[in-house]
Image 1 (cartoon, rainbow, N blue to C red):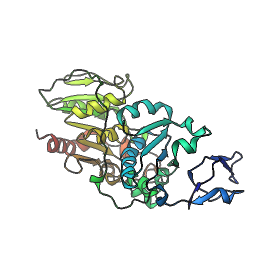
Image 2: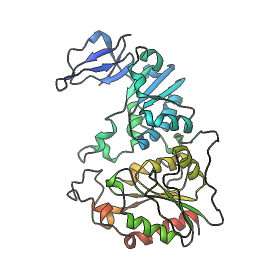
Image 3: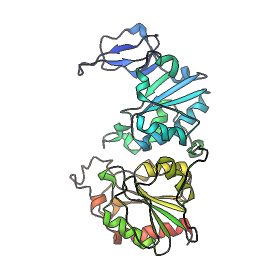
Image 4: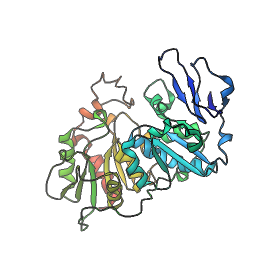
Length: 348
C-alpha cells in the first residue's frame, strides 16, 4: 500500500536490512511495507484522487533511455486525466539536456534536485518508478507479459487506455543539423546494437543484413560508438556522429528503421518511424504493440522461434545462459521474414 509524506519535513524511514535510512521528502509517495520506526502522523494513505487538479506531479526514474522515453506518453496522459498543471521527470543528469530539448512540454530535472530542502514545494507529489519495472524480470511475475507503459500507468490507477490515448510525439523546435541524405531510393536505418549483450545480434549478422538491404535501398547505420560502423556501397555510416535529438530527427526522415530492443526502438515511437524490431527475451506485446503505426508498419521478428525457445525477459533460464535467441540465429534463418516485412512496409 502506498503512502505519502503529508508533513512539511523530510522523514527518515529505516529498513531492517539497511544500515542507512531512506529520505522521504514532503509529498513523496512511498511503499512503507517492511520499514520500522515510522512517524504515523507524518504519513497518509495515497490514492490517485489527491492528484486531481494539483499543481505539480513529479516522476522519478534514474535510467534507462528507453524507460524514460516511455514515461513521456505516461506523463502527458496523467497530466490530462488528472488536470495537473505541470508534470516533471527527475532522472540521471546525463539525459536531462537532450530529453528537455526533445520533449519541451515536460520539465526534466537532474536527480540531485531531490536533495533540496524545498523539494516538496517545488516538485509537488513525487513518485519513484525505480524498481517498479524490474519486477517483470521474472517468469513468476505476471507483469512480465505487460507493456512497461501499462505498468507505469497502473501506478496512477489508469488500467483502461487505448494506444490512441498515448502521445509519443517529439516536440523539439528545429535547430537539429543532420548530414545530407540522398533520397532517390528509400532510406532504411539499421541499429548496430541493442541495449546490452542479451539484446544484441552478432555483428556478422548485422553486416549481412546491411549488405542485403543496400542492394535496393540506402542503409543508415546507427550507434553511439564511432568505432562500431562500417562502410559499403549505399551504406551511410552515422555511428557515433549523432546525439539523441539528431537520432530522432533522422528517424523522422527514414522510410523504415530496423532495431533491437533498445532506446532507438523507443525513439522510433517518438519519431513515428515505421519499425521492424528483432526481439529475443522480450515479446511483441511488451515492446512494439503501442507504437503509433502498429501493426501495419511496426512489426517484430521473434528470434526465439528460430531456435526452439520462447521469451524469458533476460532470465536465461531456458537456455542456461547461452542467449540462444541472439547468438544462435543467422541471416539465412530470418532472411525471408525480414525481407517480406521490409517490402510490406516500404512497398518496394
